[in-house]
Image (cartoon, rainbow, N blue to C red; front, side, top):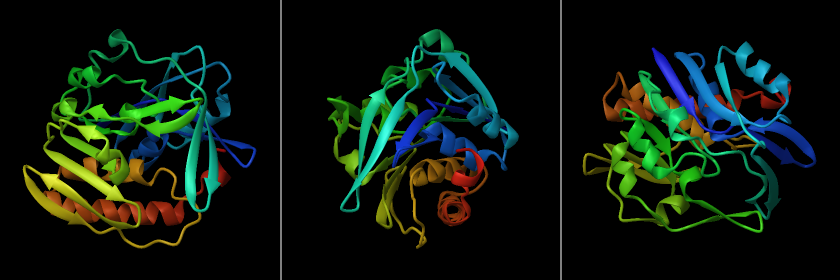
Length: 252
């Protein structure tokens, strides 16, 4: 099975330390043991080559397109809340770079507007995470901006957090809409029918990328299982991934 993930790999700064990040990173890691996965990304000349090699060592085919800069975020935690500051922004994907991309499973996971809403229609029934489509930036600080959601019907599976879902207006529903709420209950809408999402409880230090991993696992399982089985499997696999993650020890 050929899986494609599209989005910026990022440089994330937390407590003065740099590490690889981005939704495309976490989604591709999740898929790396399930299918033949390729991540299509744009990074600047400052992006550490060892991070790309680390992904390749995990079985991820990395296709980098040139960018004038690397999308870079600074993470700050205040009273349990995560605040993101954009320090630099990579170039967006051009139409020519996206048209003709084919795969058995395609996941669009932008983090800073690098994929335009209209470009979703270039792909055949993709999955997508809304985070990179709705982010705005005020002096670098990431804010959620009200966004027309009519483009979502071009996707098969869409994931959003509760906060992200609230800023979507004029939504055209995809086949599956997944709305998560951290460790609390979320919901899904599948062909007009509503379901409850109950995450497995995990005691982990860092949940960064949980939504990206969940989207990837669900999208893969949904190609071969009914919705309820795919949902339960994705929730279980996400919990196991978070408990067993070793980002710090492996890639940066």
